[in-house]
Length: 579
Image (cartoon, rainbow, N blue to C red; front, side, top):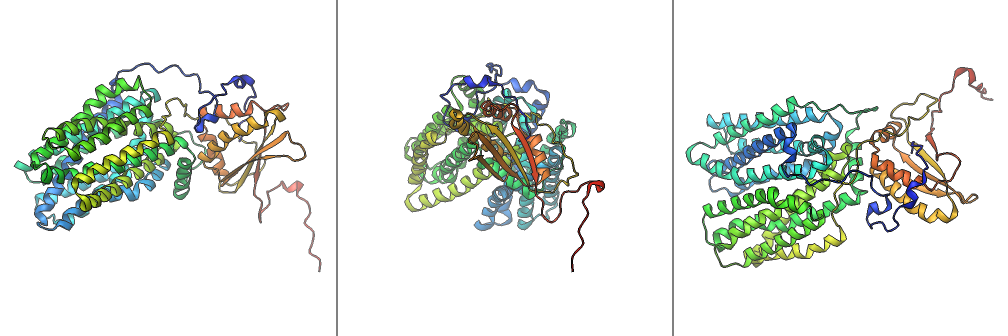
């Protein structure tokens, strides 16, 4: 590491009873002011967030109307062809699963605002083309599928970057209510969109649903055109695509908080997908209700989510931890699935869907908030892409699994086993508790000094070996090893290839931290990535260093067939070859 951090011993009095997760090895969290109880509407005072919120609501309404219109239009373009009709849903979901990870990598290495403008314009143009062709009677079944695929691809490329924008708009203490409000916008769209589409399809051609979706992009585009984010302070080029993917996956792998969120979201979405996979058939064949009743249930689900995100959830956040909120509503959702599977009373599905929406938003908004708050800005889009990948993979595999279970044992049993699976999965609360990053200062610290380089170095030259030397008293050796594990974790999260801690066998008080970087450019990126929290972690470990000076840092560049250049005046004569 380049940081010649202070060896101040103030952190030696830290509480020895640290928690048993990855930050158990870390020092006490920085002394930030306590988070005041804020109104759930506080983020709306932010002008940019308010504009984004209304744009999100309009865009999601347009998306729901478009999807319902496309599904309905396919029934007339390919009547009786179940395969073609099912392909509409496949076209809507598959690109998100396939493109989430590369989309996150792209969003982190390009100008995010321009990237979002490009994806939004692509979706708007596609929806407009579909509307025009449909109105002229020139859109056949294959054209409808092609337009749906293009829209889904653009949406998949847009999604990680769009989710990563939110933490740059509001401060970290307002992030939780901001995520809830974003969930409210999505829930309102879920509740109102299908109904609006149904009314539109009664009186108008499905093409007008595509036209409405085209208009829904206008608000987002206006906000993005007017938004002027602060330019990034960057001393090196943006990462290359494959390198960005590797570093993004490595960051998630070595972030226990992130891994816990991914495990919990995969388990919850897998189990809860039984609801969406089986409810339509359950309503028609078991409850013996009509489509209006099903639409009412879906609307109540969205209404429950909207009420919960604005009334219930903000109160819970002042009294419970993120993990406790998730656990409470996880159990509630599991019980709702069991009730829906066994009920004989007509009113239970309606009440169950309302309560299910409330539980759904409380779980997913907290998981979503945890991902956004734990990931630093430089890797946030990639973190969101892995989160979305896990979400959609679990949704797809879960729907298929519960469909097969229902086919083999019946619809009631399929829904019941979905609830039982969620109940059993509650063990993950103890194995992988969810913790947000609201207590972490993840802003870049920019405290590493620039290396004193004597020779010109190409940016792609490497690998680079960095060593840090420590003098540690023998009685502190064990504690030092524990604290250095936190250093190891943050180095690997930031993209180093290898890391190790070595002790000199001739001088046992001398320790060397050694880590390998892919190139000189990759090492310089560390200067821009290290956060204020990581600085504090490093100082906590450096506090045990007892040398007369700060820990000594050296940078070693691989010399293969080309030696480092030296001035001509000092170049030694080259001996002539002997015959």
